Image (cartoon, rainbow, N blue to C red; front, side):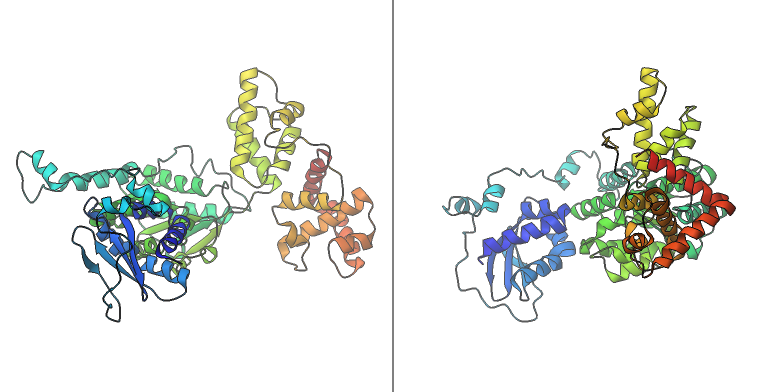
Length: 514
């Protein structure tokens, strides 16, 4: 592999692992030589003076790791600054042997561009496609100052950086409160924990048991709603507290910008001097090793100062790949609260609650239809409801099951009536209870799946008149007597337990509306 092929492969890795760094690297870094475990690059520091400091602080070690993984042997990055033409970074354990071979391209860019065989990535960069915007120079500052002192020289830059951070905070939605958050078995722990954290703010306390509070779950289930609710509650009850709510993407962008503008002091002052720090979607730090250092240090400063930290993710800390173990440990040191997909009943409550607030008459069969088909994503559920209600208001038509099916065809496919079989029945039951089908068909017997499994067996027997052995085989049980016991148990519960009877009736309605 030649130097240009190697560099192209390295850029591909960077684009996938660290897309936020891809553009600065392609603009300001070029390969020079590669020999004896030393990969020499040129930094275009003349046009972009921040490149050298940024690379040294953030990406040198990461690039060494990438090159090493591509060629399968240890590699040291040697950096040459194009304005000094001297080695400015070198941390090899052994002395560098003098390069006796000529460089693959001349030092002057114009001569290099004129070469016949030019790598594609160099053509792109040297063609002028990327026009560098020069950063404000000290001369510009002097021109714009009637008087100049050491105290005010960089005031504007500092204020601008902090202003950018403030302006890019998440805009708090006043409608996302604890009162508007529908909670139930699938999200009860997360709701109560978030509410407790907000209440602690009013009392001026920080409960170590919930610090940090780490809320996780699939997209669209209400994690961000809870962050907004915390902010709204604190703003109303304790407005003097300093609350910062950002996305992980904003944090990363601010970090890069602060490195570029040599304003890390202002960055750290803003992120580390708050009372409540809320960050959404922290799984985006996966694989971004250099940024993880700043995340780790920021977390430690806040935690040591007894400031409260609330984080959200689409998975648990331990399940976030390419996240340093020390950060996983920090994220897991408080309370980890899951938000699971809502079950049929909770979806029904959400729809009815929204209809009540909007003074809309939502027929029971419409509620059953929507809740029976949209049960994994609250955002989609709200979208379907809003579409249905907006159409009813604009057309001045009553909401019926027929026009609901037609209107929501893009969300709920309007196919032929699905065949009623054991597979379909099990899917419906699992969706109703908000559990996975694989868990019901597994050999395990956790308490939360016993009732759904028995209910599914019961429906297979009642609706399909399937034999006990067939049901046994489908549910992967050892003996058909297990199925017999399940059916007898559900039959008895229907007579003595109103909650089970209610579940049965609702599931039956879903099956009938298929």
